[in-house]
Image (cartoon, rainbow, N blue to C red; front, side, top):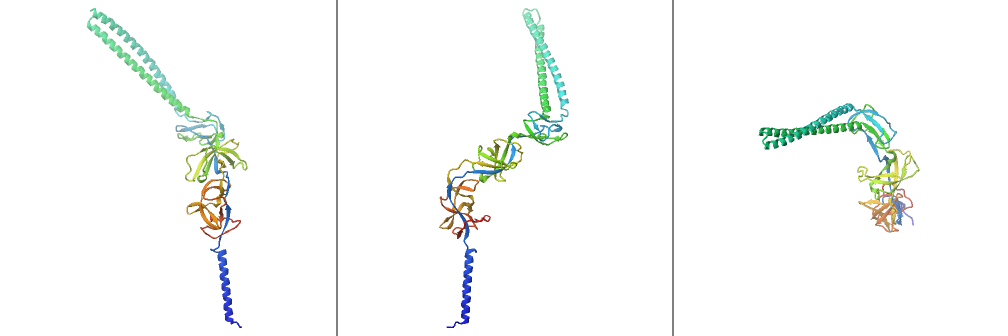
Length: 398
C-alpha cells in the first residue's frame, strides 16, 4: 500500500511535536518550577550538649579614679606622668592656693584676739561674782542690823540695790564670756574648713595605681570635679563581656570562662563570671557581664579585645538536631519533618544549645525522625522534594 507523502509529513510533524512536548514536560519536571526541591536531611538523635555562651569583650579596670580638685582653680604643678606607678597618699599634683595662706594667717590672728577677749571676759566674770558675794554678805549683815534698829530702812534698801546690781553684773559677764566662746568656736570652724580646703589643693593618690592619662598641665584652670589625672589599679583588670540576649540564658556569676586575648593568640586564660549587670544594652540587644581573671597575666592592656566562652552546667541527655535545621514558618519556630518523603512543618520547643551547632529539642519531635537540614529553596507543606547527600545552602532559603 502506498502512503500519501502528505500523510507521512503529518505523521512526522506529529511525532516531533509529541517528542517536543515530552521533552518540555521532562525539563519542567526536572529543572523548572515543577521540579522537586533538593534537600539535605538529618536524623533526630539523642545525646548531650555542652552548653556554652560566647561573647566579645574589652579589658577594663575594675577600680579606676579621676583625680581632680574639689573647687575651681589653677593647676600649680603636676608631679607624675602617664605610665608611672604611684603609691597610696603620694602627692600627684597641686593646685594654686591663691590667697588661702593669707586668709589662714588672718584667721589665726582673729582667733588669738578672740581668745584674749575670752580670757578678759572670764576675768570680768570672776570679778562680778566676787562683787556679788560681797554685796550679798553686806545685805545679810545689814538686815540683822536693821532688825535691831541700828541702821535706817534707807541704808538697807541701798544694800539690796547693790545685790541686784551685782547679779546683773554677773549676768553681763556671763553673756560676754558666752559670746567670746562662740566667736572662738566660729573662728575655729572657719579655720578648719579653710585648712581642709588648703589641704585639698594637694591631689593625692587614693591607692596603689598606674597613671593612665594626664589631663591637665601646670597653669591650666579647671573646674570642681574636673580630672587632672586618671588612674587605674592594674591588679583589678577584668573583661567587660557582651553577649547576645537571645543566647544569654543561664549566664550567672561564678561560671567558669575561657578568655582568649587578641595579644595572646593560641593561649587560653581561665576566669570566672564575677558579675552580671542588671541593665542590658537596649540599643545592641546585649547583656553585659564582668569576667575576672583567675590569674592576671603580665602585659595586659586596658581596652584590649577578648573572646570569652562561658561554660554552662552540663545538660541532661535530650533529643538533638543541628541548629541549621530550625526555621521560622508563619511566626512559629520549628523544622520540616519528612513523613513518607513528604515535608510537613512541625513546631518545636528548643532547649540549650552548644557552640558545635547542636541544639536540644524538648518538644515536637521523636528520636529517629528525619528533618530537612538544608533546602535549595523555600519549602511548603507537601512540596515535592529530592533528597541529596550534600547541598550547599544558598542564603536563607530553606
